[in-house]
Image 1: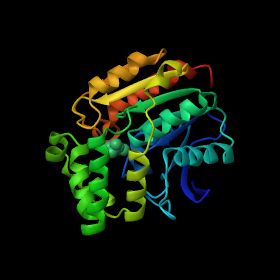
Image 2 (image 1 turned 30 degrees about the vertical axis):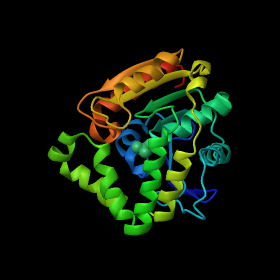
Image 3 (image 1 turned 135 degrees about the horizontal axis):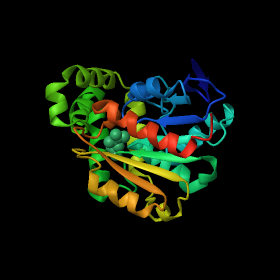
Image 4 (image 1 turned 120 degrees about the vertical axis):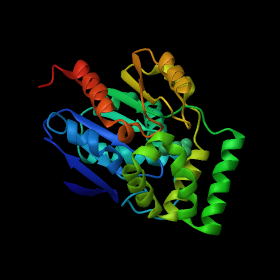
Length: 267
Ligand code: MLT
């Protein structure tokens, strides 16, 4: 079922009476990044996905986004749907939103799943790279930007051996709204560092990372798991940054085991 909440496109699957999981996709992608996970989990869990503002089918508006405005969007969906302590599951930029949401009020969630993400804010070099990305979009258009960016997200072998998946994701990204993509770039380059708050996370947390993730490599994510008191780190073999798409079977298995371990009392 599709619904519009606070101007955002929200996609609901499963029984509302079940424990809920809310999924936050990466940049510059959309909710379909989680298709395999939702298909696998929807019989047991109420699965909530949405297109982050400015991406997918959620309109960009004026394109003035911050990480905190993304957290406000997340809260508006949780409140409107009256979700009772959902499990939050975020990848990369979805992870940046998740870390900030946990820092603001982790009591809203019962557990967290973080994939291929980081807590450090952008270095000066990273900020300049994002600004160059914005300049590229202004000069050459969004297609030119995504054609450069999307290949960095995948493992080289995935691009070679699963060109159907790669081309589907690339072609969808090429249709992105330029204002939305630039708005996300500004939100990411202006985000705060959430590393210090990791030690305060008291909910159960699962940390997943693709073996060949070039953007947020396994050593970065292992450190995140080391800092969070109740956490578990799992490496996803045969995958780059796009773990839910590149190795969906394994990701589904690990996520469902984690959720069942922590919430088996909810039937
Ligand atoms: C993402 O997948 O969301 C991006 O790689 C995040 C980023 O560019 O920092």
